[in-house]
Image 1: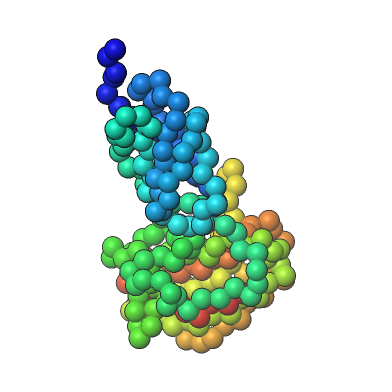
Image 2 (image 1 turned 120 degrees about the vertical axis):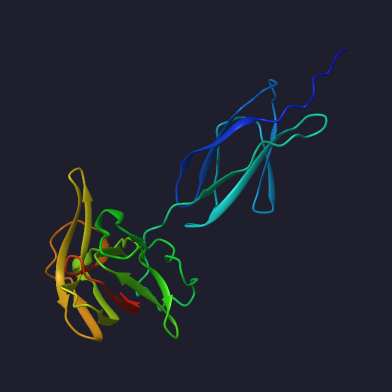
Length: 232
């Protein structure tokens, strides 16, 4: 009897991502009943799809391959994805950024692209100034990872170096809120010096979960600042 060639799954896609799992689906081209999934130096056999792979690490990049189990395995194309960020439950939380590579954003830290201007092409990123610090050029908002705790119970401490370049209108610490109406920055405190700062959030009455830093500069100017040694 004629035996069809072992055909690789087609259209491998990631259909859902959480901090600890990834769901995969694909197109079966030969009415197969078993498939092999390869990722992170592991292999697992599955008997249906879509399939959810659990036990992954948050904010981690993975590469997945799927093959049909038949005479002569044939693999699909690779699919790449990064698991989601898990909110921070354990306090205190702290970073001096030296565990991350210069020129990147730390895992689960983000900036708001809509706020970037007068930055001469510089995106918020870690920059080595003897050790790593967060660089902000021009107008920008940088958000910390989300916390599970009520922000009104928290205190933030960090080192700030500001005022490099033209004058900075303000450097603020606040809360980044998102909702149906879009994103909003709620200011809590304004900084005006090169110093170690402590910010208390007891006045905050909202439901946001992300502490954020906002820098504002005069239109058409060039200014930058650094912050480091963040502890909550």
